[in-house]
Amino acid sequence: MILKAFRDKSNKDYVNKILDKRTNTVNTNKVKTIAILLNKEEFDDAEAFTDYFKELELTSPKSTVIYFSELEKEADTQWQNFFTKKDFGWSGKIMNQTLMQFINEPFDVLVGYYNKNVLEMNQITAMSKANLKVGVHSHDERLFDIILNLSVIRFDVFKKEFKKYLNILNKL
Image (cartoon, rainbow, N blue to C red; front, top):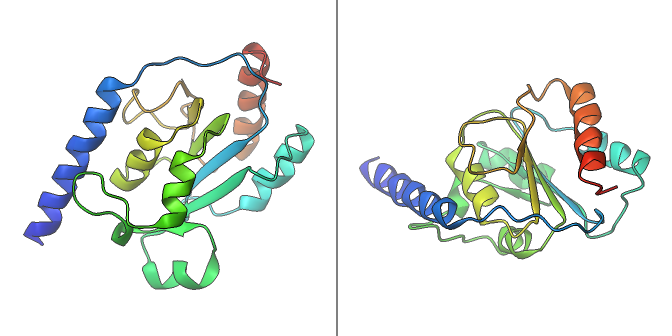
């Protein structure tokens, strides 16, 4: 239990270090690839995102959805792209190859579609090489370029606001 607290502290320090160095530079390229980061306990309807992105004509095969699950056994059997707390070591070390590929992929947009303040999800958001980061919570404003500040159960509102901001930024 004590070791877990020390590990969490080392990872929190790592996230703060990344966020302190982060520069908010968003390119002017049109959106082609989108990554979605979901907390399974809050919202697990990846199909809703798939359908929405088809409406926006954003259907790149590189676009992906990845889930965080607090229940390791459940995650093992239901999803291909998932991660749990066990995939994190000390000082920001990631021990899941799929998760490392997700982090290192230069997506045009990363959507952090979660409201809970979960250290592991914040770490993935901070480490991601995505050009534009959009979130729906404001636990740490340094994580995202755009914060919509809404509940994950309001997917209809998210769809309108997300499209509005992508149009304002001339990304669609």
